[in-house]
Length: 209
Image (cartoon, rainbow, N blue to C red):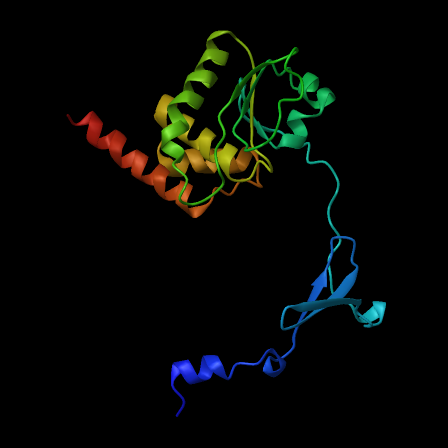
């Protein structure tokens, strides 16, 4: 049996096996990447088109806006970037909880940007008070606020659930059900859901003091 030193000394790049990776691009183009040592070659995948497996990207805009309360709407960045949709729903304030999404009409609407990562380990509750304050501000000014993230699936719904729990005193299950009824695509990531459940416990414990 060779020692580690002997194996290192006898190492040869020529003995490395080729590694092949098939890649399908968004457009459906298929290529094969082949690695041999430190050398890579890229060729078109010769598989016939009728046998290729891929997907067609959905490039349509998601303009569905969920009515949670008369002053509180929920949607995606597409809705927040479509002026016609904003006017249709009489939006006056926009709460942007996406990451890296610019505010499209800064001169026409009142914005608050609270950048939150859509990751189970991200601290949602750290940002919740700031979000709730802005929604309450909109309510006091008799405006209408659209809460959005990128897809309107995880972060924005989680923030709205937190708002309903914090400012309306709703139970977690009731708040989540109301949000999902308003926007069926709503599905906060597991980390956010756990934080909101814990937030409920914190509220109950706090009320007993």
